[in-house]
Length: 137
Image (cartoon, rainbow, N blue to C red):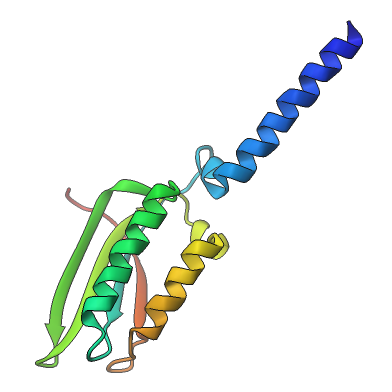
């Protein structure tokens, strides 16, 4: 009976390890997570506006699919500054504030794409990320 019990424990441990590998960071965020809402502003390089919009949309699909973010709030805005320079603002909530520091490689690859499509403006970086608080839905 001891051997049978040990076998069950080994299988349970294997399932737990496999689940952690497959789910990645999202499993850790289910317990003890400290959500963080951010406002991300991307200052598009001239001529890259359409591609940047596509990459931002793909980013949301990826982080949402990996369960790294809450469903809401999520908002993507497009604006113009300095007369003709496009920028995008995306507001969303990470399931845990530590996720960006340990983002999975597919997310890091999307961030690299974004970085190539933005430019610094008026002393600000091409991508500004600011923690914010939701006051009203």
